Image (cartoon, rainbow, N blue to C red; front, side, top):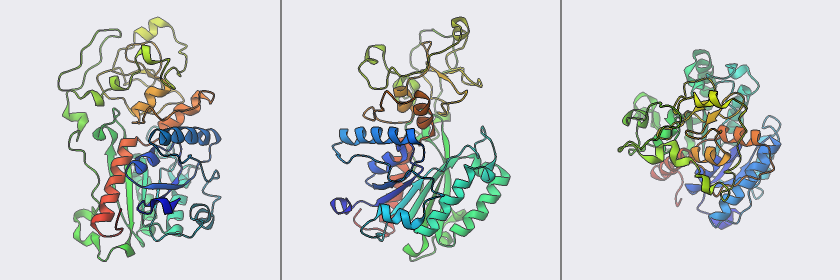
Length: 378
């Protein structure tokens, strides 16, 4: 496979989920050569969604999850064997978003002591064992906001920083054209022996990596005058200066298209009295659950599952699978099998990295590698 695309940098994808981060890197010209996912249903969803998406782009390579075990059980040697049967190349990358519930400010807050939190430690272990040219790790902001977690993370990173220059920054998907307020912290690492200078000495405050900035939507949550909550069922017109692409309205499927568009009619039935539903205002998203989105505002962080319910702005139903995929910046060519459980679909979608944000990060990595002469002809 690599011989066909010699100018593409191979990527190992950990905790692949639905492959949203992978899609961003593929869009930027990287090649995903190895994937890892433990959940049996996520595996089927990933393979179907990515395969249909690639097919629509003229890429006939069928998607598959190469390894279906926990990375705690998979050695670095096994990963190399599966990803690079012809031998490990001189340059490749690792990307991944270790499960984040133990660090989420709305989650268990068990941190690195939780079972999911420990997977972040293993992610760092595999990086040091595999020695990629670069790595990207995405996680919730709670990883760097809570004092105890932040201090422990710094200790772990010191070990990685023996061999890698590491930088991090919190990015909001809304600032990259995604109609969703979703803040996540991204860690980028470049192997030190790939550079002929100490870049940290030349960088103020240790910030050496040029994280992507979308000037068009920079600081979007404060840049625009967003619509406010109104009574359910009220007729509205879009505020003149508000970009439609940053609004939930751009993701909603018109009724006449629901039968034709894949995954558009897939949503959970609401078991709540109509008068109670009608009392929830459009844009009333500060509720613990049953948040009704506003058509002319961005969505709160997509986190579908458990008690988190996002309602359609002007219809008494929950959002559909297709609408939530759109809120994550996923193309309509990404199609999920109808027969697989709805709960798994929504959970997988909520776990993902918005594709346009992943793509922006991927391009910034690519530019850095080019500019600094780390990898040529990419």
